[in-house]
Amino acid sequence: MDALTVLASAAFGSTVYLTTFSAVTWLNQLASRIKVVGLVVIGMVLCAVIGVVAYASQSVTVGFIVGAGITPPVHRWILQRRRHVASS
Image (cartoon, rainbow, N blue to C red):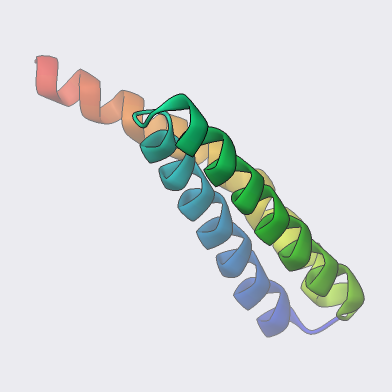
């Protein structure tokens, strides 16, 4: 397993998570019909990305899963820290 490939894939997995999170947050502010269409499109894109990652080498798959798995708790921690610092 190539360590550099794992790190690059982890960064890519993190980017996919943050992009999806931002897009869904933005879609939640829109009208119901547009929100549903947007979520369907995001789901199709995510399925395509995951399919490409799954077809790639083992190190790419491991890196992508690690990046996408570590990012949510770190993202929540950063957001909580920001709120705590702002309220002090």
